[in-house]
View 1 (cartoon, rainbow, N blue to C red):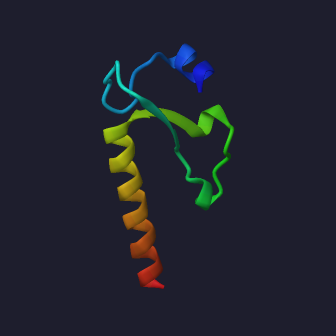
View 2: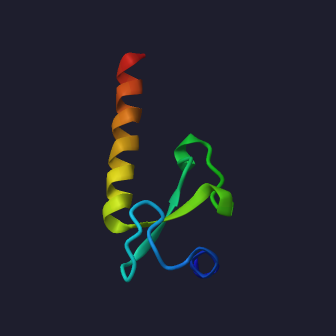
View 3: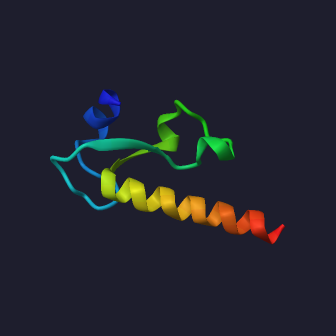
Length: 68
């Protein structure tokens, strides 16, 4: 992830916060077929933004399962 922070800066790509721990978030989740190591499939998110995004994706996945 160091090469991503070097190229993109040490800031959350969602809210712009800096000076916080960043997480490599897969745009297309691995469960949904996303590429694990493709930098184009990863964005850097702070913990708060990562938690919100993950919860949103999980909720959508659950809704989709219940509609089938």
